[in-house]
Amino acid sequence: MLFAHDTECSLIAAAALVNTAGGAEGLPDVTALDQFYVAHAYTGRHEHTEAELRSVRELRPRLRRLWDVDVHEVVTIVNGLLREHAALPQLITHDDEPYHFHAVPRDAPLAIRMAVEAAMAVADLVRNGELNRLRVCAHPDCDNVLVDLSRNRSRRFCEAGCGNRAAVTAYRARKAAAQA
Ligand SMILES: [Zn+2]
Ligand SMILES: [Zn+2]
Image (cartoon, rainbow, N blue to C red; front, side, top):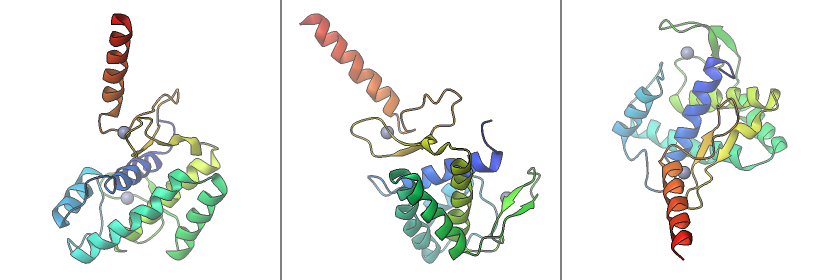
């Protein structure tokens, strides 16, 4: 593991959340948010309401900017999110998880907890000089984001199958070149 467990989980969840906004709506209804909540092992308050869904969707463009701007702008966004939600980091344990940071109460709205978790995790990257772990997919037709948690910083494609697509395109190009 490169970073603390909660940092890695939060980064992966933040990237996945951002990617639900790319192309077809990945969070079309409350049920889709329920599935996202389970898939990323969220705990705490979850209302299953349209209002909650809306606030989670509205968070996405703000988080997306973390992938697109320089470190100084990232710091401005991170500090803004932490200040706005009165983040107060506390080490806690629950549900058999090891000690990890929560910076807002567990009964805070889901979108706020998602925002603060992402901000705390990105703050970790900034402090470690590892912000370049946040990448945009290298496939020319894809605008998804990813978090490269590989040891050798080798990850270039998102999880939507772009690595395979790129390999197939390269293979066809080689074959066409060989036949020409
Ligand atoms: Zn927790
Ligand atoms: Zn991609």
